Amino acid sequence: MGGSGGPENAKLAGLPADYILRQLQDYRRGVRTTAVPGRVPQPFMIKLAKALTPQDMDAAAAYFAALVPTANIRVIEAAEVSRTHAEGWRLAADADGARQAIGQRIIELPDVPRNFERRDSRTTFTAFVPPGSLARGRLLASAGAGGATLACATCHGPQLQGMGLAPPIAGRSPTYLLRQLYEIQTGIRAGANAAPMKIGIAALSLDDLIAAAAWAASLPP
Image (cartoon, rainbow, N blue to C red):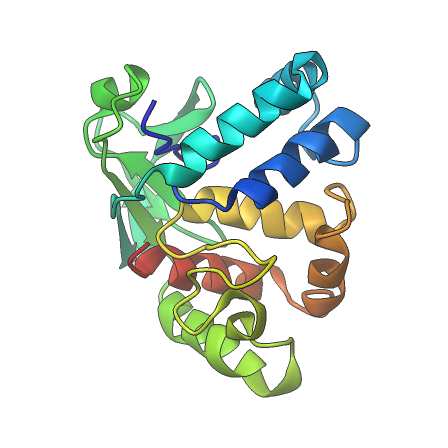
């Protein structure tokens, strides 16, 4: 109800109403799907969007846009993390406490898993990212890393809190952000507002995408 989202889905609180409406329309038109076969959240959203009336969409967009986003993500660089397994549509740490190298991954875990399972909007998360990600992400966001991409701040604002048609991305799940960057880069997520993003991130590596998502998530919403 608080629009707080999580690794498996979007934080809706504070997104511009027009942006939310565009996403619902993209789901309805089939230009926003998923790279993961059989993944439930996107097909559910597509089915939901097709069932909504224009009045329903307007009401939902206005509701979530009026909510104030809260800071609920802590980003930590770590070469080694807890070994994890899939639990529903999120990761959970293995009970035996085993550790493993992080590799090219973001490992984002709810601090109190039961709270997230209950969709408690006060749930907080810790996201572990590869060493060096935050410095690299800051460079990508502020300067485009020497021409590797257009600086994120150009469209999303200096603190990545949104500007014009570009949504706020500060303080949002890095797992979710990385998934969107990948799906835009590969053309799986299309739509009018995805087109300029695809051009902007075409030359970025997976490490770059991880870094950009990590830096954005570390900022206050």
